[in-house]
Amino acid sequence: MPSPAGISGNDAASLAITTVLASLEDSKAENIVSIDIQGKSSLGDYMVIASGRSHRHVSAVADHLLKALKDAGFGMARVEGLASADWVLIDSGDIIVHVFRPEVREFYNLEKMWQAPDLEEETLH
Image (cartoon, rainbow, N blue to C red; front, side, top):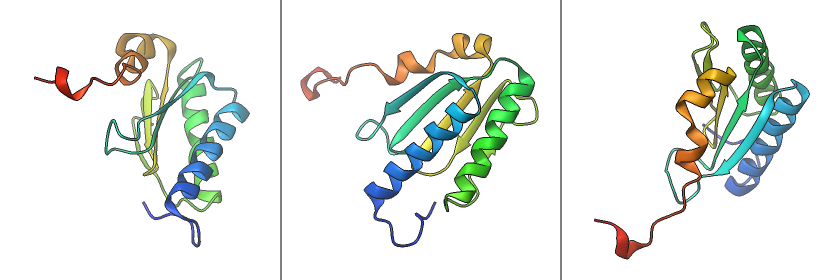
């Protein structure tokens, strides 16, 4: 996804993560976790995981975030899961956001997988 005009890659990622976190806070998302995945994955720079209290809250948090990203100049992010609102994935390019209902978040436990320490080169098989 292209960065807003005139902003370098690192500045764009920094603006994007700030926009995402502010939107989630404003929407009263719960248990917001930001994970730096630079160097761990080519998917993006950050993964953000948050919870909504119900299907309706998850949907509202996702809608608010999509509007905030668009208003900040990040264009239209790709979205999956909005219809059922158990787990909504929003991919804005540099930032991947997961908004879960609490039970679904606990089941998948993405934080554990992505916050695992990096293995040293010698330990890889």
